[in-house]
Length: 270
Image (cartoon, rainbow, N blue to C red; front, side, top):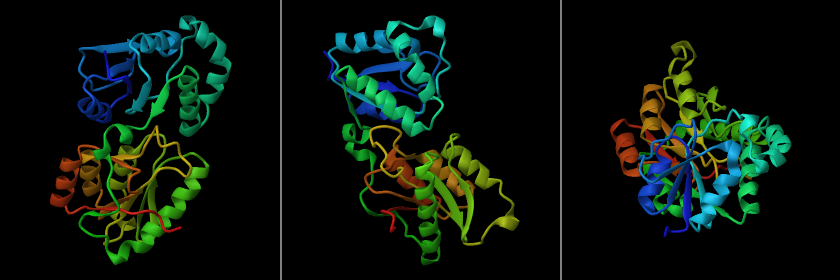
């Protein structure tokens, strides 16, 4: 008997932390998708056979689903479709051509229609987010305008379902988060010519999209974000309180302290 929770896991540390928080949760990964979960008691499913996944979950008396970790869009093989996938394929394939938010809302609906309750990672492990306030260091007054500008950009990005992060420095946009993710954004900033940079150091602002469903694709930072921010010459990171996941929180905050990267949890002032 499990806790009634299933973790649909992609890559990264989040599924691992959730499994540590709920050790008896049923862990499911998808064939061909990267993950960091231990191999024991792991169920491997196929996107083309969702009916089999639903039957597995019901067999284990699962009532709650949490979707966690990075997952690329599947390359579907129609020859493997079960009856359920054949029925939804026309709509599903169209949805896959749209933004992440649209795709994830559609997937949530598929599970809810089967009677499962899709829950948020932060509701499973409450220590994953930060309360409002300065977690490490302080936001310099010189960066207040950069943060405000970043929030304007993020609001416009939200309407286009583009990304959840932007780097601004000295009033200039050094990069926005796209499908490639935050790591790619910070790598790009790190190789930006010094002639385009400001001596004060920029700021990464990371927030959920406007009206985002906070059960999936929750914006996330972690130790790697801190290392990359430091390498990119940034001064700090601003996130939304209670709405951005902080993986390996103690390690992340300690690393930020040692690398002189401030972390501020503050809502946008728009």
